[in-house]
Length: 136
Image (cartoon, rainbow, N blue to C red; front, top):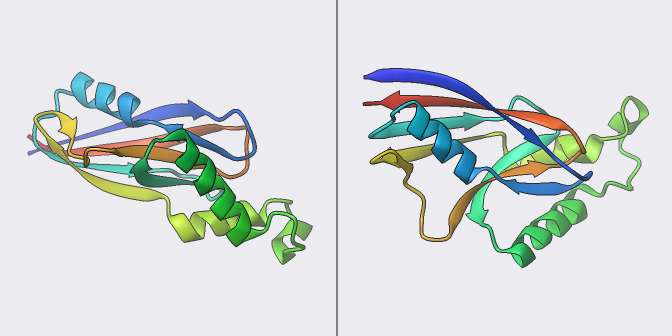
């Protein structure tokens, strides 16, 4: 059993952004010669999140709108007295910052329409996605 660690660097373009990182993760799996196992993807940021869902453009916009409705960026949250991004921290709490994905024949074993998505909630920024592959 092998354990391989790596990091992706992802640049968001706007305050709220959804970035499909599936292709970059699969390129990394090819580079490390992954075969069958599991991948842990973790984002070490409290104002961004990771999700697995369809990459259709309208849905990506809907995800952003839903998170805005749930976290109310314009609300006077207590944390905004420290740093004007409480909504982003709350979005991370709702969605989460990690995913565990099976790897089969060197590829992410996602469903037909599923993609690994980085949700930027306080951009634009440079984000890291930490990757750990465990398998053969």
